[in-house]
Structure formats: structure tokens, C-alpha cells
Length: 72
Image (cartoon, rainbow, N blue to C red):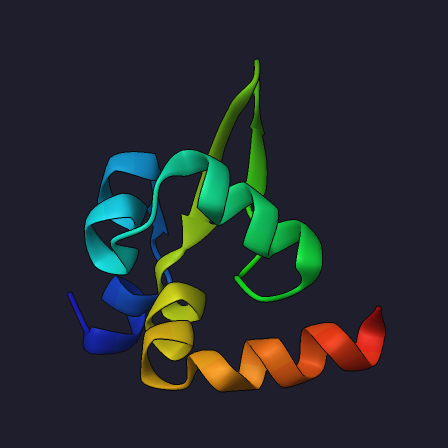
């Protein structure tokens, strides 16, 4: 498996929580504010996040803050 393939996989909440250090409510609130990557609906109430987007957020969380405020 290539690095690009690994980075584009969908990850579920437990992995997102470990990567971000945030609780579910904080992740969802920041997502709504445009300060965290948006989740992907998988169906049946299941959601996931693109690992590449969470990794990009980790590298530059301020980018999401700037973009979130600009889009608000």
C-alpha cells in the first residue's frame, strides 16, 4: 500500500479522537465552526473522516481557523 492510499483512507471516531486529542463534542463543534475537517456520512448513522484531511489539520490547525472564520 502506498503512502497516498494510506492517507486517503477513511478513519472512524476512535482514531480521530486519538489523533486530535479532542472529545466528540469538541470535534463536532469545531467541524461546525469550520475549524476541523468535515466528516463523511457512511450511511446508517455511521461517519468517518478522511485521514489525509485530519493529518493536514494536525500540520496546520490555524488554517482551519482562518478558513472557518472567512466562511462563517
